[in-house]
Image 1 (tube, rainbow, N blue to C red):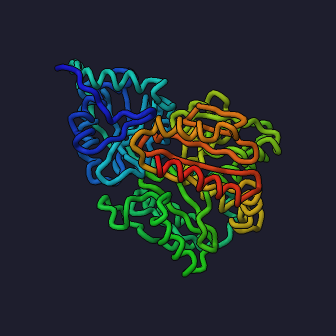
Image 2 (cartoon, rainbow, N blue to C red):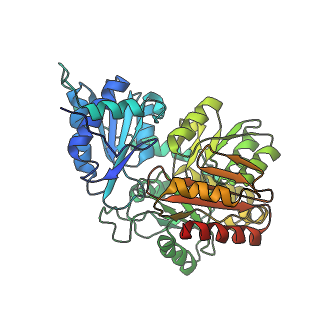
Image 3 (cartoon, rainbow, N blue to C red):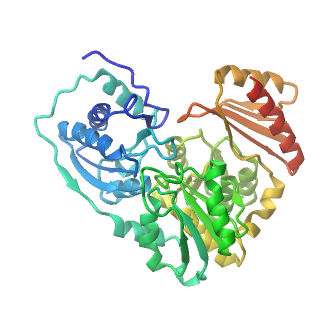
Length: 452
């Protein structure tokens, strides 16, 4: 069969519209290619709550077993459960069928090797793509098998190991999975914790009756914020569909940018593990670098994206890594990201410091005000990046191109990049203690972007 380009492959995973870009047949080819590249004998698979996920997973399993792989199916689960099962069960790899926070007609896959090691375009994903596109597979002489697997009990025990339950007050917490997969894990944790959970959009539903689970969308924050205020809760937490990211709301219902949570957790880990490396992405950096330097850590910048951050984490043996987009990575979680560990840690910090979340981040918000991530669809992203760079040429003191444009303009900076997973450009702006300057420069940049 002649090769055909597969547009569903990104820089670090698979994302595409179903069925035009990603179908059961394409999923089978990806499974065959993965097995060939990884040389896997035993692989765990699972799927998120999307309506197309079971069908895509069936194609994936067919491709894996055709190549002789013994497949363990975790069923409906979160991305981090695949990471955990791969490491805990000592398997050769793991694949989760998910499109995370993408629109409803999308689906995708994330891949790991043994010990939950990431696979990116620079570490095997391009080979998988090439083989899947060529589609020149012959079935293994030995047919693989399909088995079920349940690692929920040890996974829950692992999550609870990050906190001292005896020190936790009876916090009232608003929990919003957005009809994604996080609700099941909250239900498993609830009997072990002293918290009162106020659950909204709790049941998993791939029809997304309350919108696609993406708390970065302003309209998706309203329900969590209002519920926090109405119930006088101590904290609000929301997740994306596969719950590898979690988002925080303080007791006043205010959304807390993930950037400040990165700094908060970096400080906490450096107090326990001095001189350790902390990995961060290039989008918003000054607050994180300042905190890491203050606590004698080593700030390490990585390209944006879960596979790249994990690779940097392993290379540096970093104790913690964080992206401002609410991905948080932990050395003790196999250098992988988790959407459950961060909120448990934040509750632990609130308890130990006897402070609210707002009090924990207030000073850092003033020192390094930021725009939050702003997304725009544009017709020619590369032309836009060049236009922006030329516009600010006289102000730019230092520029990096690790991930789009990262421009240091003295007392303010910005990062403008094209998304690896969506057809948009993403803008982030921050300043040294000058919120008005940050807002002014954000407006100036948006004027160029929207007019370009």
